[in-house]
Length: 480
Image (cartoon, rainbow, N blue to C red):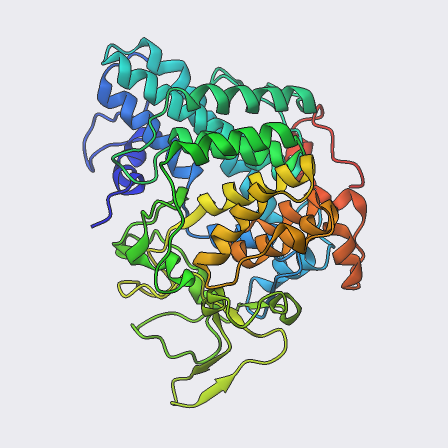
């Protein structure tokens, strides 16, 4: 049975952040503070668990991650259903400053940051085992940096709030790019020396996760030397390896959750009756799809793969096993999926899933990402080289493909393009494509080639208008 951090927090977080009282009792306990809560080791654990809840998995994580990070790219489209009113403007590069899901993400990430700040502020004053105290604070610092990493990905520099002692009258300005860079670099680097390499509870932060997101931060900002060096530190740690099962696509099956390839994930519980789970498959299953383990919900909203994207695969690539090209419907008929209608089933059906809820974990960071990050950084520093090609070949080998040679690439540009395609084949349906295309200067260009009215400033999304309205010191991104 999978034991993960979200299983632990489902009850604890309710009592920590909301009033807790029994029905019909005259006395209530609705105020939690230093005098009556932040006193014991158990309180410290509850504080930390509360930071994990908004930081990791939630019901609509696949919808939100894929909308902003993949439906704006050359991979994914959404058609039909009630959510199309919110997805289509984003896919068409016509999003507004009032898009509700952008506001939801902003609020979720800052909620996690506030909870992390509370933990960091209060736990040092609690009498408990000092080693465990240091690790709790390090995990909270990691989660705070992780949420700022996600905010920066969407919005660019944002207000950098590092204390829980805030007031409704506070109106923080956006941090400078240099301030945010310094913060993320310092936090990820420092906590990587405190956090353990492995955790007993699946889904908790580790030193590898801290170094991994530091690697991705360096990579996305084209700091090639530090990206290469930090990735190498993870690779030489010996903690992680690539999944090499019967098919590369099997990595995401529930039986392989916890595999050494996963560095940091949003873990969903096996018991989906809690209502907490991954809803991806209900969006991806085509009309009338005959599930292996009914009853399952098939949404009218449909996540579909662009046919042009599938052209970058070769027939021998085991990663093609993750796609559904034809299926049997509930009438027993075989239905072939045509142009722009193939489905990604990267997260296979959960036998214990209920309705639209599955227990499939959501991957934030994998070892394959680190290998390709170092390959890309070394190519930018040295041009085609044997180390970069070896990392690429490690992934190609476990995917059932022939290896490539340094001599196959005419120069840096040629290998750079190949790495971008390899990242597409490897990380589709994980919400990494937007970052990759922006880094390669292809995000706006490819959108324009699809006939969309994309402009250069749209490499960032707008600060939610509600936040601008509340804070006159919060300057909007250029172009909005």
